[in-house]
Image (cartoon, rainbow, N blue to C red):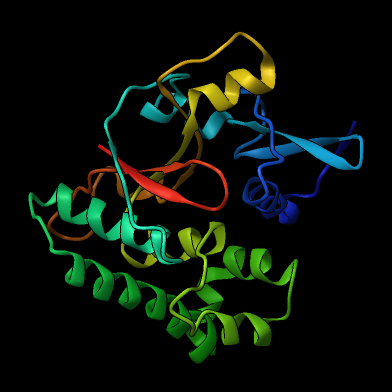
Length: 226
């Protein structure tokens, strides 16, 4: 089995987009999520590993139970889910138009720091590496200006830091069981955590942020868990 380089972690999301990824949660000494692959037929199967950085946090649990809040699949789903989740954590309800507009604002905020401000871009090196693995920065900046741009790991890396917002991404339990055997389940399994440093509060007022929990259900679609 050949380990992938850390900068190739976003290949896992590419495999998720096409419904090719399989998941097995295992313990790992690495400080963050890593991925491994093996060739199966003409495609690769991937295994998400939750590393030690998630130990002692809610994301270390293998199966968790939440209600699914469905999000419109118009290309903005990641940004819509984040908007709904942050509003929910503040006890707010937003209408569909406000949700769409705020989702577009999040997308354009990523464009601003990554594409329009070289000095700010330096603060998001991890996201920049993930972006440029598959395409040039110029091409990325052309695409992110479109309203139907599909957000993923790169944007989560930026927005968790920009909004000082802890975010955990889950997959359905049955996806994990289907990859490792054992039938179907109705819970959710965490595969990635972003912005964990903001859980305990930040700034003079020690402003704690509740986690926004996103469900990645395959075919590049995100819903909200609450």
